[in-house]
Image 1 (cartoon, rainbow, N blue to C red):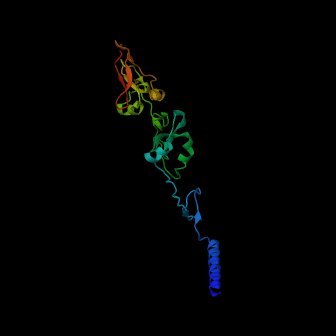
Image 2: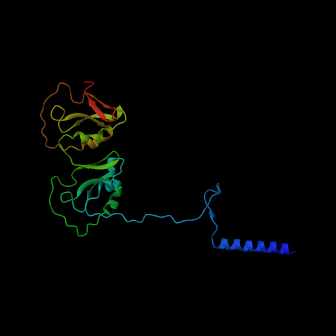
Image 3: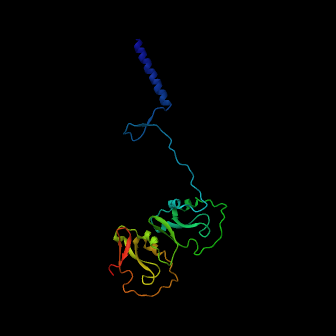
Length: 229
């Protein structure tokens, strides 16, 4: 009889402890899909609440790049990078149109003194384009683009990506240069040139400009050769 009462008392004590633990939420909760047997406890997830840096001068290039992602030219727009314009300490840039409000919110120009220097050509008179997935801003020129400037237009995967184009306002016999670029960038490349009022000589060449071949070379760059002329 004594043993039976002791057993009943022990069972009662265990039941009370179990109920108390359940009420106070000290038992782990099962999470997941229900397929496993792992038990976890709920924990708070830390989040980064650091406010973004606010600028008065030009935004650094690595931060600016966050606003420049694009897939085509008409997604890009000109912006002034900084509180003052390009003639007074700011920089000309291009970003995705959808990021305009977020970009401008990164500047606090209250009380920023700007000089009043004029610039020729005027700020924003260049072109914006999407090249290699990034909005870019370039001033127009009447001169040939340098080899370094040409690189972003020349990347390719196969021969069919490449096309002949004239580098400069005048043709290959009168100061321009025969080059090959990725077909995707033909329109934005030609827009780099301001040829209004440019006087070209009228020299002739035995082999007409553009008679050669545009191919994608082993460096995965479009290249132009006279093969085929």
